[in-house]
Image 1 (tube, rainbow, N blue to C red):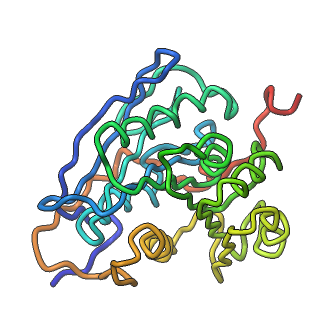
Image 2 (cartoon, one colour; image 1 turned 90 degrees about the vertical axis):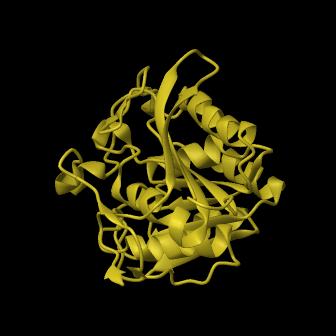
Image 3 (cartoon, rainbow, N blue to C red; image 1 turned 180 degrees about the horizontal axis):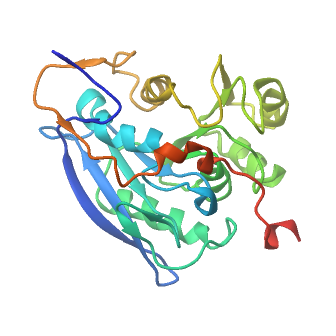
Length: 265
């Protein structure tokens, strides 16, 4: 048995993919599937604000792709939204303040649906939570999980739509979040009767040091038959990722600081 560390890569079927949007863009992505079985559930990952470092390789989603196919049988689909760059490549188009990104979210859900991936959940982080609330309430989606929701681009109408859908909606809110902390989150999400707000003690917006907690909470909801906490050790083949191309050394860049632009109009 060997400890699963931050850069440990467990066995999976991983494939680089290109998502094609309805407005003609190609988005860089990856699908990670269990190596020797069919997935029990699927998560579509929507990353933090790309204008400040968010990308498909942001650490929580990278670790999800590295671990969840093997540990939980969960398929992980992650991609760069329009104009976003990472070690995987750069998606076509330009950042569009959560508007044109509607096509990006639709393309990812369509990919999962077309490939018959089961129980599709959308998991958004920070800016990605706004995309989830605004554009992820698709008939093919079973539910959603929000990590550090700032509720900046999304509005009451989007929360009302989720309330009407009746679909599960969970918000994991860090105790020391920079933008929305648990007490206020409880008030803001009260409009969604089925919403579950989970305050995470000691955590911050970037989930540094708390990725394992996040992954456990995701699995608890999308694959309830899988025991959590997930194993912290692995008895088998395991690789170590080269993270020199990632900008995790500048984790502060992932913060969704205010962005000048049309959303302020």
